[in-house]
Length: 287
View 1 (cartoon, helix red, strand yellow):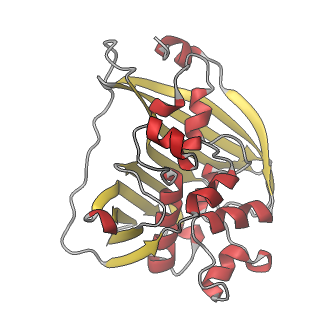
View 2 (cartoon, rainbow, N blue to C red):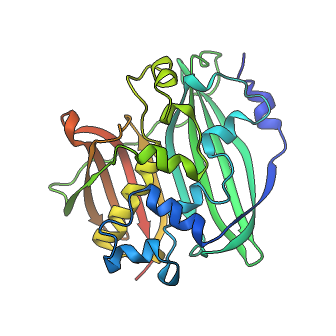
């Protein structure tokens, strides 16, 4: 079996030194749609080095190394065709505000392998720390189609939350036609997001947007709409990717504010309001 659960779980963690500078942060912010309008003071905090704040979801690309999906496929015990891989979900907890410039150590390991019947689910955990201590903990859920059915543990079931009445806020965010081409420059060079032939082999009519780009666009919408741009209020962000997003579409972001958290749902407007990001929660620090 190309996914050897026992070997993947027994493998030693993989550690690497990563670093980033303001230009890397700015590129990430541009990749998730920041900078429109270009002279808006609320956007300049994402694009101008003298005012720069770091959106916590930058952690998913910090250091320029392979993102969670690609990193998981390079781990011992995992040898699969990239065209059969889906990024099923992402969680991120930041332990303190991210600096605009840093050198850190990131440690990756396969924390769990579950048998979902028609697919294997890999959980890749990444922890990063610098000289001042822990920075973040992230977990990517990576589905490998056709690799389930070996009789392993199915793992916990997703506990979907229910919408509680009308959302507190609804905003729409356009996805540019070249959004995936720009976002992939942050380090995710999966051809699914740029090569039409590869996208068709993976079962899609054309290249799709990175799930982590949708993830970042969503978090930015919450921060800008409900937190007055204060990136330090974000403690964690968890979301499940339920459908792909195509460049050129419009994202409708619905937000329900609760006690210390914001529940979020994202839909693709042009495809009949199809849900693309669900079971999403942004947990907040006190403020």
